[in-house]
Length: 423
Image (cartoon, rainbow, N blue to C red):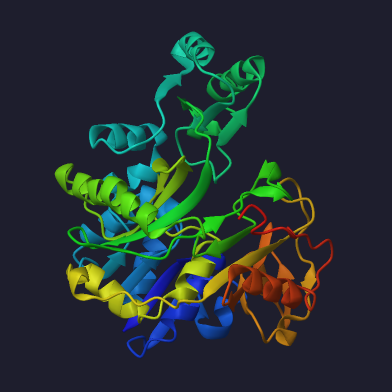
């Protein structure tokens, strides 16, 4: 098969690494890709939402399957674009259709879905600029901290958790009236705060059947001890030590099954990954959010633990035969630590040379915001590389990742030294 992966981050490098191991994959393209994918695939400089250029590439290279990494093309309807085009409709697309991608595209849509299918989640109300005063009144009925979520896609930065009522009201105004997150915050969902520990659950769906992948836990804050600004993710661990068999069973029965059957009841065609952000409150799981693709950096610990041929799984998703696949998982723990540019998640410089990658032998190096500049690898984004290791325990794996990081260098390189601290 000839396969095209859309995206340029650590998630897409991990997909490329895993797909390139499959005997079913003959040619592999990544658009736009990065310095890591360049080593194992052919990068094509096309944007992930440039559907016309993607069509041209698919026809020119005779692509059989498109694996969609990020959320933007899914929310904008790339799967529908393929289905509606005579020349493209035979190509398998891994990722849900536009109507189902609203689970990530709109926080309000996701909340309504959760309520409609009796899936446990936090109480909420949504507001826009015309009823901002009602939003203030709703905030007054809640106990702090206050959770404000921009309804649309805000690149992982549209969620605010605030302890002060006046600050929460000011931020609500800033989001709705002053368009703090642009069009993404035309509508804002205010939620009750759930106190607990978070984890990510990943589910494969072919539209009828589902399979659950290993759980993971990621670390979003820039600072040690989960302090400071939110980022796209600073590290991850799989499996999650506190997710006992009993707790995983609750997730499947109360959340996964009603999610998959809810998609069918609501006629939301879904072939791809369902990412369910879960919080453990006491002994009970509740849904914080849905994403309609794999998480990053969780992909960098989940896929390395998957023993199956990923292309075989994707074919089963396309053919709706996922029930015939037996998922095989590596028993070892996997951990990843994200190296980021100094200043991230605020302003940072690009173009810093990265050295020492070739010296790493005990860990997997997944490139994210990194690109080739001649024969040098240089930084091109905020989150630069994910260093993934295996171990019999997550402590052993994390130690290995930190030892590998010591061999790497770029100017103002930053990373969290406490991944797994709360376990």
